[in-house]
Length: 236
Image 1 (cartoon, helix red, strand yellow):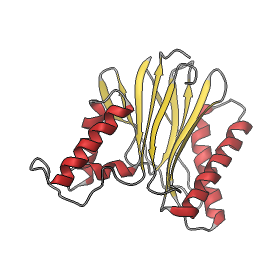
Image 2: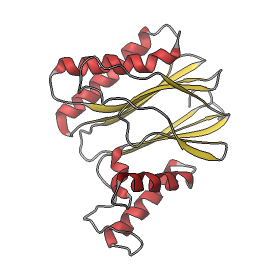
Image 3: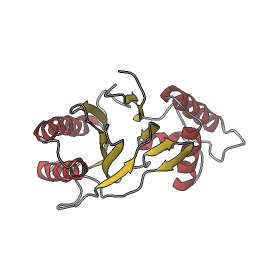
Image 4: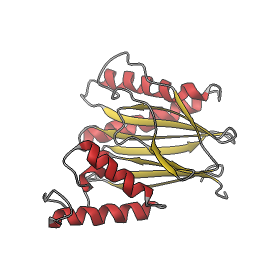
């Protein structure tokens, strides 16, 4: 809980060392910052990138002067892209970085090839956040977008790793993304979404006639990570 905003997450790595990673921090009374990352691959090299990511984000946040919050997310992504290019370990990441202005009720954000796109549930509607950007670590000298959106007093922002898509029916990516939006719209808590994903995945594994796939599946797929940010009305 940070200044009336509640951060919650489910993290289920496939291995002891995972490529999924997230974090959130309070900067001061006005701002909090968070990020959601999916590093390519698994194992030690991917875990090394998550450690690097945490170290660098802590450093960048400590060096920030609290001015121009709209520039912080794209600057983070640009710097992280430069650092990954310099390591020469052949890793890249999809990444979402957000800064919440708790006074202005605004989300400043940037993203690098985030999939699925973050979903914002507010005022009875569910919508994908706008924007696009290149993966972090693949190409040199990439510029990342500076994006913002208003946040009402009550909202839920959902971020999911691509492992979630393995739980969903459909032969196309668009079909699975729409299915995810339907499940998110029916969920108020992380646990509710997780239960719905588990149920859908079990039906797929059984070859339920309602769905069009019968793949070999476990209870839930590898590297399943979901984050929910909600506010502003929570009591600290």
